[in-house]
Amino acid sequence: MADIFLICVIVVGFFLLSIVGLYFVVKYQHPDDKNDAYIPKLVVLLGFVLAGGTVFLLPLDVANNSNFAGCEGFNTAVCGGLNMVLFWDIIYWLIPAWVFILIPFCIFYYEADDGMLMAGTSVGAKPKSKLKEALCYESFVVAIFGLIFAMTYLFMNSTSIPVRDLTGPEFAAGPLYTITEEYNSTFSASQLSNMQPEDVAILNANTINFELSTIELSINPATFYAGLMAWLGWFLFACFGGIGMAALPLDLILAFVNRPHHMDAVEFAEAQRSLRDRVNELVNVGELLKIEQEENAQKYDKMGWREKRKAMAEEKKTWIKFKQAVYLMEEDAEEFANCTANYRNYNPLIPIFSLLGGIVALIISLCWVLQIILYMLPTPPVTPFLNQYFRWFESWFNLLGVLSVAVFSFYLLICAVKGCFKFGLRFLFFQVHPMKVNKTYMSSFLFNIGLVLLCALPVVQFSASAFQDYARYTTVNQTFNVQLYYLKFFGWFWRSKIFEYALLVILLLTCVYLGCKPKDTSGGKDSISLRDRLRARVSG
Image (cartoon, rainbow, N blue to C red; front, side, top):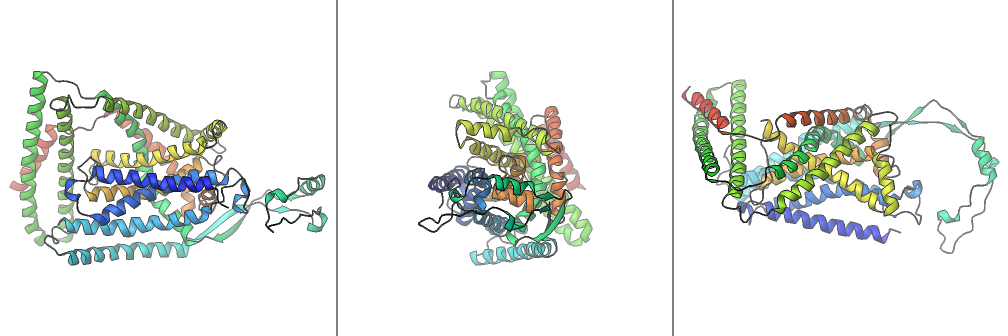
């Protein structure tokens, strides 16, 4: 029978995740989306619940198994009684459905609704045509990734698990025990007798083959797709997670250091003039971009395929640079307002909480670095480190260790989002999607939820490996650290610890880079250089 307390935890957790997700959607949505885009909002809300539930399922798995190996085999009083295999299988199917079906469809439909899809071909389109267009593009996405998923499962679904042979005496040579049948005709561990000297003699008579052999098994589709999604997500998580673990503490501390202060007349005049000049330059850049876009639309028909692709890539890069400059200018304008017009209404507790959050984030990041260096990379580990502390926490309060696992795991998801945003601001590989109060379009919501869902399973796998001593009897440990760990092709990356090394190296490089350039800056010189390049291209 399932533990009533764990059932209550699931219900309360789902309720809290729904409330927090609804708060973010309502608080951060752009006014243009206030009475619109209901289906994307629902997808974002449920995606947030799914991502949070995926991460929080790991500590629930720990609590359910209660550090007892028999929980997977039979129902005992010390176990939670939850079918964690079913829980995880549901998660393994829902994440690909959200990432490759629901989120892309909502993006296509939302972009068509904004008249942005395919360079404005959907402007003035009727709802039926927008739905048809979104379904058309979505069917292409499903066909591509469905083919990839089917082919990889067909040829790579076998896992070779190492085993050690144990040879014992015949079964008849062992002692016999009589188990008294209980009134309800069910078996429980309490019916088993304590080990007797005869049992010890049987154990001593066993012979062990110290040479490992392997047993090859085919894993089920849900488990395989969990491994495939984790492998794909690791490329994002290793990059953005490493950047975010360094950037998040620094930005929170800098928010306190650079908190608003009252300006005198000279400072006010200089800041106002600087902002005014940047606004004027960005207006000029925007007009030049519009002119260039109109001219390029006529030139593209006369270009070859390769030349056209190069020109479109250059145009896209320029737009990203322009949007980056606009975003940073808006950030500086907001800071200027907090130092002047909004100075009396500014909450002084905000920078204090930022400082406290930065210190906590710094401690958690340092703990993760030490856990990687001391436990995950060496063979054998130097020390269990956090595993040992989690068990120590449980000596104070039974669920304190479980809650600590939840905090450390969810922190990694936050770092992944932070790292993606920081990377997008510093380098122009893709458009940034910041989350701003009352300024976030639904496309940014969908992008960030998709990123979080892609990183959710790598975070679970990373946490299960980092806390393998503490969570050794969990269902997810048997999945990621046994079945998928020895999976054909994909398992090599995890056995070689490629992603852990990449995460650590990127984190350390980010620390050095942010130590040299801690602040995101895009001053007037960037706007002027962008304007001059555009003028040269337009005139040419």
